[in-house]
Length: 176
Image (cartoon, rainbow, N blue to C red; front, side, top):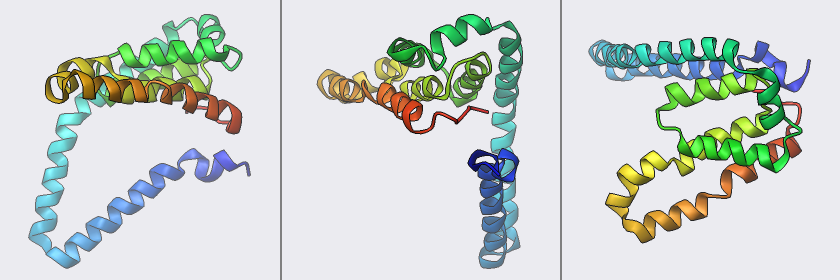
């Protein structure tokens, strides 16, 4: 069985489920039934808040997967796109606002449309490390120009370096 196919590709999800169930059991036996019930309902409030966003993200993936021009995406962000593809993915990640319920489905969409894992990694890391929305709204006002600017400049090469590393060391990996 190939390395990426263990547990049908659900290894990370199985790990998280196992961890959640283990913590629930520990919570029940260490803190008692009432604490367990409070924790459960707190979790349900989070699910209630996040579910609509997550479902919208899934709808976004479904429609964009059908509408995205495969040839153009593969040409500009695929494995043969070189540095230009990584720079485009980095630019898109830095420019796009939104939470993970938007960005992760978009990464999946561009992957399904022909982008390689290196471009997807560059896109997601650029969103997290270089997001202009966060820089302008949060970092500049709270940290000041010098600190926020220096942080942003130091983070600038990270998405491209990560994309290059994925292309070099994990060429067989595909974003699911």
